[in-house]
Image (tube, rainbow, N blue to C red):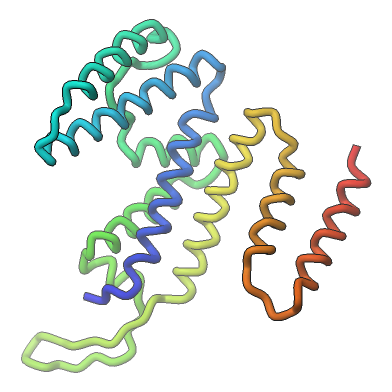
Length: 219
């Protein structure tokens, strides 16, 4: 098992899941539906916390009381969303979010499943995500192989995950009434300023000038 690359695909999976859960809220058709979905998300969080605290052997009475209060509140919003104590399964969230944003849901699901398999150390993910260059039979029918992460697959998955996450961020900004272009430019500049460089900040300065020029021409 090659442990060195697992963390990369674990982070990709986390980005996909974070985007899908954000989309679950921001793709709601109305404010009321969004509130109903938010209550469900909070209830799911408390539900998982109760499980963890129970495993720790901690007192969960306060958490259970909180869960009961949320359950009562959820019923008040039942006409806008199912008053369930847990979220839909992750595959459903991913596919729903992708379909709404006109992204191939099969591709998003396949990528998530592969990254999940890598995170859990599944043998098929090792074969799927690596290029093998040297295979030696060390005893009949069993082989030692030398492999490295497939650069084409890794690059594609990073690109597609970034696009999916960006869609979630843009949808959030739109729903909150923000100036999307301004916020995105600010985020890009902030990231660039924090990234080590060897040009003395020349690229960041050029980016800022370009963004300022674009802003000046917008209505």
